Amino acid sequence: MRKTLFLLFTLILVGMLAVTTRAFLQEGIFAQGAKLWPLWWFRATLADAYFGFLTFYAWVYYKESSALSRLGWLVLIGCLGNIAMAIYMLRRLWKLESDHPAELLLRPEHRQHPL
Image 1 (cartoon, rainbow, N blue to C red):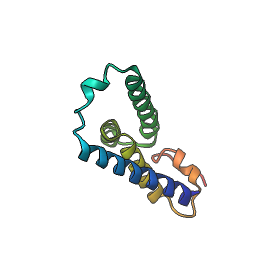
Image 2 (cartoon, rainbow, N blue to C red):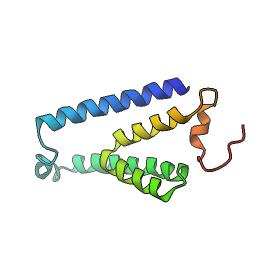
Image 3 (spheres, rainbow, N blue to C red):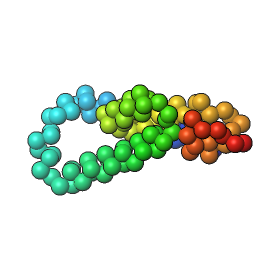
């Protein structure tokens, strides 16, 4: 399971970096903002993305014990979205020992892990 999750989040990270880089090279990030904001589907998609980021951040908040770490991940997720989320998961998976079950990812780092 660890390898499958590692592959999944690596693909997400690479895919997001590729599409973001391509979009950035084509035009600036704010170039279409004035044209897109009046479209309700744009607003709905943006709200959906940020509510998803907030949902993921709630789990990050639960996992992290340091206020500085919690704040840092909030900023990264808010600014980078799925790129930061994939990096967070890859970081967690990297720290997970190969003989430990993937379920340990769900538990907070600062509490005892009964194995």
